[in-house]
Amino acid sequence: MSDKEKKSLVEAVLFVSGEPVSISSLKAILDMSEPDIKLAVDELISEYKERSGGLVVLEIAQGYQMVTNPLYAKYMRKFTNTVASNKLSMPALETLAIIAYKQPLIKAEIEQIRGVNSDGVIKSLLDKRLIRIVGNKEAPGRPMLYGTTREFLQYFGLKDLTGLPTLKELAREEAA
Picture 1: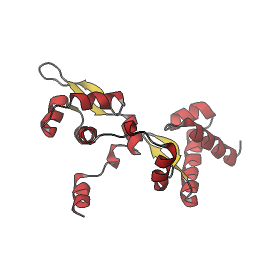
Picture 2: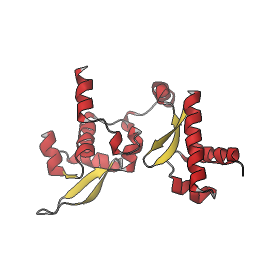
Picture 3: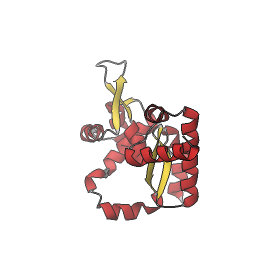
């Protein structure tokens, strides 16, 4: 198989997947070596970036995904008539931010930071699979510890948690 065919095959899988696909998954499906897959993905990322078109290939949530170019997000929302239920409420975003930056932590710690009961918000985030129970704290009652999920990374288009803005960056943005 030629390099062009390998790249086309990887592109086809990314196009139909709808979710991030890991190198190991591509390797299992495509019967290609890891270096060949990595080379094909890197070339695709570069080609789509150079093209500045409606689609891009991004590294998201420990995998690769073909997505619409973020520059056209507002038009895609209009086109698909995005339902408000897919959006996160301010309390949900606040709780998610606390969990993302301070994970793992228990519900009482979240409520202490927020200053309000968080039962409903935590249930909603669990239902949307943006957070998960990552264990139990070594404390009386062994309360559940919460952390973010792969779906969280995908929802926000992050490669990993290091992609989150630092608190200094957020403060600078707010001041501007």
